Image (cartoon, rainbow, N blue to C red; front, side):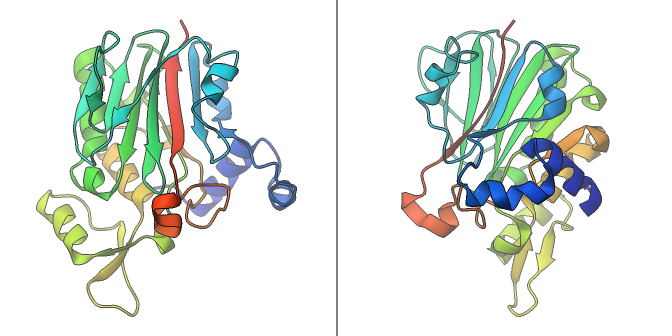
Amino acid sequence: MLDSKKRVEMIENLFFFKSEDIKKTQMNERFPKVFKIPSWEDIPFLVHGFGTKHWREEDFKRHKKLKDFKLLFLRQIHSDTIHVIDQIPVKGLTGDAMLTKQKGVLLIIKTADCLPVLMVDRMQKAVAAVHCGWKSTSQGMIQKVVKSMEMHFGCESSSLLIAMGPCIGRYCYEVGDDVRQEFERNGLSLKPLHLHASQREKYFLDLKEANGLQLVDVGVSESNILEVDLCTHCEDDLLSYRRDKKSSGRMLSFIGLSF
């Protein structure tokens, strides 16, 4: 995946202010409502963002660039189910990924520790939003989404731009041997599972490393993979199910085509 230097450079860009200002901003309680990818802001037809706990569903209707979009949510079930949106669905959808070339539709993923991933192909004007918990990750969901983009929209994996939002960090995400077994059973790399130093059959899972490796394996350029390098469990302005349990709520990540 990305080395530490690249991560630091990216997070400085994503925050829109210098790294030495980050603590000051958080202390002044001006943590951003939404993180955006600066280079993606240059794509004229694209709207996107990774919401923090300060961004709520009603904010979509208050934002001048988003208020006219149709909001699409999923009933997320930690699966590898993908929906291709070619028209506004008449009833709710169940699954963990959506992709579309439909204009005026906002694909929205809810997370509170799981990894939200956004994709765009600027040549084909196609986008995707993916919910990657350990179960979806162990089923190779992110690779299946890339292949669906290729199949349905004629995208090339090497041209896809990927953004990973905030999720629970490696050192906060302890998992059991059942997770390792699922990765092994599905032929996935065990590299993102880091052995616990003091507990047998316990691991620390790096969700971004796991999904990054899978993306590179299907032809996505490593230089096209960006990330918001923040841990939901460690940051009070982000929502974490492991930290806050049922009171955590969910953050909203979104992507769509304006024209």
